[in-house]
Length: 346
Image 1 (tube, rainbow, N blue to C red):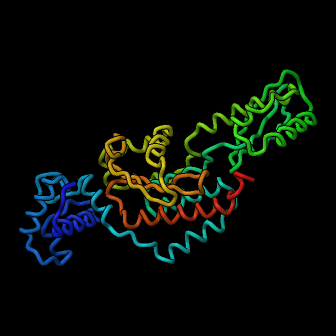
Image 2 (cartoon, one colour):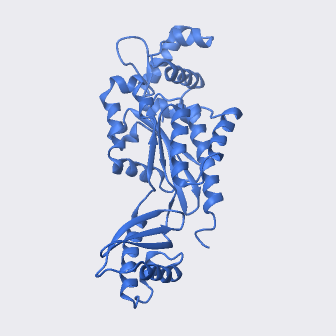
Image 3 (cartoon, rainbow, N blue to C red):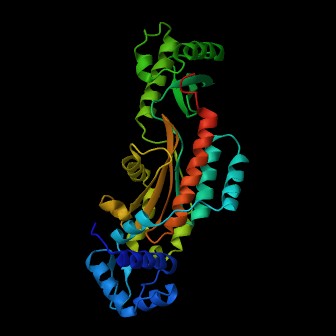
């Protein structure tokens, strides 16, 4: 990134700020009048030309106005201050979470709803997910004929259900006894540790054990927990999403969950808990995001984490969005810590 003079930095910051508010190309006369600059419009105009040549601004049409480029937004995000959320906003959000039912699914839905409302953009939340799946509990329930429902619970609260097809009808009493033996033998073990144990002598135990290992191997390969989102209608009202087909393509990410999970995985891999990362224009890696920005944070406790963030046009109010994402991520980390800390090793 090219070095800027202090005057160029100030002009660029003001122009990006003004464009975020107005969605209109900004001219030199407007900057002088709105911000009472002790510079002539001609001087501002010359500096805007220089900033355009350096790649921070562009001229969308023949008018004298300029708008930020991706590099212009990146400079703004790197230099704008991110004040704490006002105390009354913090109190409102905190109150909503502490009134919530102590269920992960409810927390995730609430986080998505609150963040979308506060940021007026699309919220993205993934449920906390154990980096290493560990067995906690299994129940096997007789359904009909030779079929039974297996409910597998992992340390951290993830629940998975599978139908188990047995070689012959089995009573509920036998199913419960088998589940009890496996619960005792497999407590807090990974699927690799379960495979290393001696094979189960009882055929029913062996059948259930095989399905447990199969499910745990699949769940361990997942890179994130279940995805929640809210606020699609928020961005549809933005000028960029009304007039630009490229920006609307970003909405398809919520229909094609794999692509969105890939973005989260690549972006947040190795991210520090509580830190915030900003992707602007897809960073050259994701074509569908070239008109958008994503603000993401990593929440949870070591070994048991999730992601939270918002997606919107590049012209988003970063100075409000970033602290909002950071604050709600902190609340979710506290909830995860209060509920699941120690469970991975108990």
